[in-house]
Length: 217
Length: 328
Image: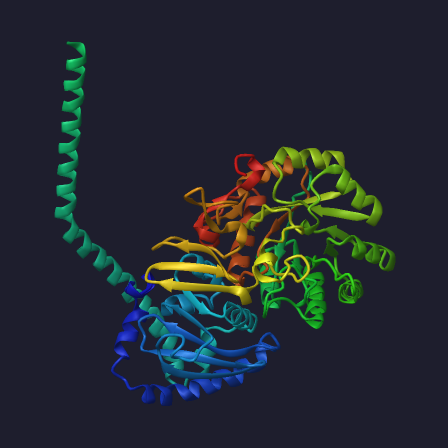
């Protein structure tokens, strides 16, 4: 399991919350949004995906579902499937990253795909060229959170940005609280380490003094 | 020392990145065709002829000089694609064409005498006689210097050939090989960086996760293995980790990025005309942040967040490269 999977975040929490919901129900809810996205984004992708074929899976880490994009010489289809290994999802390529990383990559002020990859915030499996081509196509199309909110029915689309901001605030507060708890748990250990460190230093000093005395005598 | 500020030449792999570069304050933007004439020939990247002409128009309208990279070596049997692209640039009003092949330079000089020509880093011209030759034979107006020279060597070159401008890389991916002549990636993949335009083509790159360990491969070769939490890099053979005499090491160079921002005053004193940002394969966020940061540095201002560009670096590390003479 990648390091990023174990990082607490609102996205991970969302993944845990939707676990009990059957995939069929999620697909029914997501279908109109995905159709809206394809109708809007498809023409904007231009010919950047032309000549490319295959299924690419995007898996928000810790989520039970993956978004799959079926690319066929420029045409694009979207679906939700159960998150699994790349082979089991029938994908030639898979990208796994925390939901926050995936959404940040759609922001000019955020990280770009290379930076997220270098930082090990996302992983790529399979056909790297398909992942890169899709990334360039989406970026040039100006794909962003607005596209998702526009494709969502009212009032969900309008509520999504607020929910994301709320989630980020909760995440920041929870991270601070978690750090405080961690600090409290580790405090006795740190004290003991400091005590041992001081003891070692005293012993080293004593040894050096003894060696000097022996050398002098 | 230059009386005018050095020109900031910024990368664009897509029309969206071109807009981001201009928005961030680029003085010039370089980009290229979506074909083998481009040394950044990656799937989904670059400009169709129509997009390229529109990009040139956008640059000219917004006060940024458009420079088009046609910087691979044409096929021996057929150079028509390379010639066609030079013609498109001339007709669309490109501010300069960046090329490396002498045959193509000869064609451009004869066919489009008013078209400004820059010598690509892919020509690896790193000494005065070489630069003088390109100037005399093809009226080359600017040379993009390889990243293998010290600031002192650059100063000596600009002094020796004062009528040819020099452009140096200041930020981004670092290549310390003899550019245009390196075949290591081609050996591993069968695709030439110099003729097909892709060093470590993405189609041959694979990553494998085994627990916290990530292995990167190019073709049939394992190039690197990154430990838990270790920042990763793109698998080019020159940045691979190899076992040499029983010791694992980066044989040629570490997978870090170039950041020569601290040397800007030295470049100015050395007579450098333009500063280049590598990264046509990078996203809008990279282009916007790096250009803003460098514009501030050129103006003598301190960036509001000096670490803003650090997060974009390969393997999370930065170097001033060979410029300061301390790294080879």
